[in-house]
Length: 468
Image 1: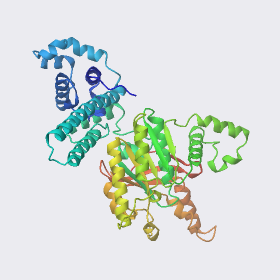
Image 2 (image 1 turned 135 degrees about the horizontal axis):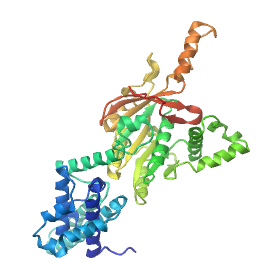
Image 3 (image 1 turned 90 degrees about the vertical axis):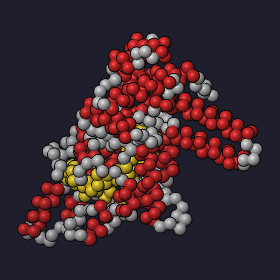
């Protein structure tokens, strides 16, 4: 049984949090849900409030400035004044531990408030005999549920405009320090340059007709995100493809990225000779260990939510990939139509992204309308139940490969001018995937060209910039 957190433990966590913020103010964005009122000591709360006020003005909360602000405060002087602040900075945990400090502070806050609410409920039951006991108990239950939600690191609750601005500016500072991406990088331009990376709280839709490479794009993004962000977990829910098949594609892609001249297509793995088998074994070590694959069919939104929160107890979850929406298990229709049910599912996944503080990348099919147009490029309206999906998404990426359609429209006569023109066009686009950003709340829409090698399930950036 875990020992209950004492007043001293809570105060120690508060001090560790303050020390970490004084040492690295940009880390405030990682504990934006922790407010001054959540700290157990009034002095600690006042210092956190002063730190936030300083960040709002675009300045760093230096120890000397904090000491000057609290000079004459008896509680501050009793703690040791400026020397105490320097001691907090000296003993501050590393920046990557600040989320754990925030969770400890929030856990202590929830325990205090829960205890107070339970005591209040007991008094109400004793002092108001005419009141229905069930009503009082229900009131206590609602308040405790609210406290539990407030204590979640993924739910910051309501914030003031200033608090939101502080968190946003801290994100910008962190992005500048890491090379300009507001979210986790994947190594692919269509995510990193177009969307600013996989951003916490965002729902990104990746959609396409069959054979357009949307699963390959998602897998490449997931593995790339894992490889480039080792401190974060990446979850890949593969509802259709077994984990072994997904891993095989990852091995082939990795082999191709290491040595493109002699890589083995994943469809030929079962024919690999002894030397190739040794190469495959070597590629295993290059796969990201922080990418977790769940290959159960018929998962529901609730199943995915449970898995994500279980993973968060082990450490931060950076991104969640789901392949794909239309084969997820639906909730009971209860007289509702398909569009309404799909809308509830995408709303729940958008809420999960915000609550869990991660990016959710949801794959979706497109309807057949693109097949009926002379130009087969997909449009936003081609999304199945597009109104519901489009409304909840922060961004929508549509995959298109012209080569797929050209391969199925070969002209007659191998030596004809029409056939030569067709062959030239096919050669030019055979390895090109257009990723059409049809919606982007955080930036511009447009098209990014990615290099696609279907035999290796490889999606990479082209040698030259393919943005339009």
